[in-house]
Amino acid sequence: MNVLILHQFYNTPSSGGALRSYYLANALKEKGIEVVVITTHSQSSVKKTIEDGIEIHYLPVTYNNRFGFFKRIYSFWLFVWNIVKYSGQFRHADVVYAISTPLTTGLAALWIKFRYRIPYFFEVGDLWPEAPIQMGFIKNPFLKLVLYKLEKRIYWGATAVIALSPPIRDAVQKTAQGKRVYLVPNMADTEVFNPEVKSEQLEEKYGVKGKFVVSYIGTLGLANGLEYVIGCASLAQQKQQPVHFLICGDGKMMDDLKREIRNKKLTNISMPGFRDRSGVQEILSITDAVLVSYKPLPVLETGSPNKFFDGLAAGKLIILNVGGWLADLVDKHRCGIACNANDPEDFLKKLKPFIDNPMLLMEYQANARQLAETSFSRKIIGSGFTEIILNR
Image (cartoon, rainbow, N blue to C red; front, side, top):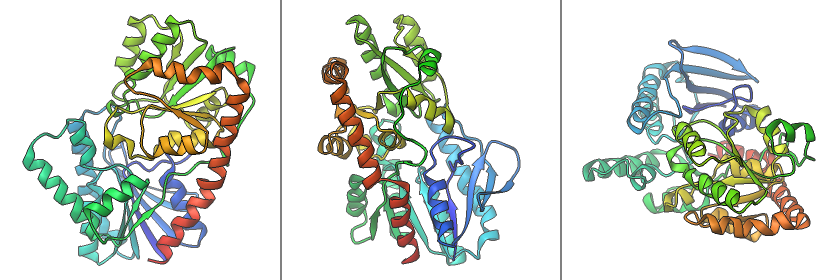
């Protein structure tokens, strides 16, 4: 069996970033399936490599987390166009696995299906176009209608849809009633991330010795609402709470966040920048709680963020500023807290019991690791995924 994966943001451990598609590809490979990946890089020509037994084709399509909305859209369409030009080389594939975002990757999968008669699965990690519509990026009523129709067409064209969360599954089923939809959430990398005793040397390196460390690790984008972190840090400093925030990553809001930190003279928040896999391990080893932050919009409560599952694997207290299925999950398993995204006071109020009571913190951290091992490990998620593909 041969599977062709289409993912604009395919990463490997050596490059850093989200590794879901890499682990899904490896799960297929371990079942004896030949896997070929089409992705992108910012160089000027096509590049082919083989890494961990997986053939990867990099198309020359530039993308950066700091791009504005319309520049991102151009990059998404360019990826589709390059796949259309390049896909004839892969007409021997038995199945295409197309990963969004962006939604437009589904257009490439549709093209391959009708041109070469290759069926496709479509993975939905974020609800498009609902997310940019709720964010206010898309306002034209006609464009909204076109994009909703495109979404529905892509779902119906797929052999099945893979949803990363229960609310995404429900939304897809509502849009394309009767379509097969499987739930395959993100995975907790329990082999790479483990609970660790804090290293005094690393605490001194990051200036957090004796502090309760809250880390945000991920994209610094408009959707992430990281002004919330600034508000929480400002209030914690004002009330002399022993909390230190680490913001790791890159994105459009990087410079704005740095400016706000300077303007407010905050000494309890640091921005170490983007970190590769080993760098993330280092940050998590001195972290007490992992923060998952989004703007308070309904569509942003439906996601399945990598940072959440990495936090579980590392055995960290989870802090959310959103409701939805993740908030229900941490409440049920007593491994985290959900705070009001519009009220930094609520953050400090809910965090204080864990600052004051190390035993309570350890209990919640242990529950987080247990949830990772029993429900979201790479082995569990990968096995379920390969069964879906094999039994198509």
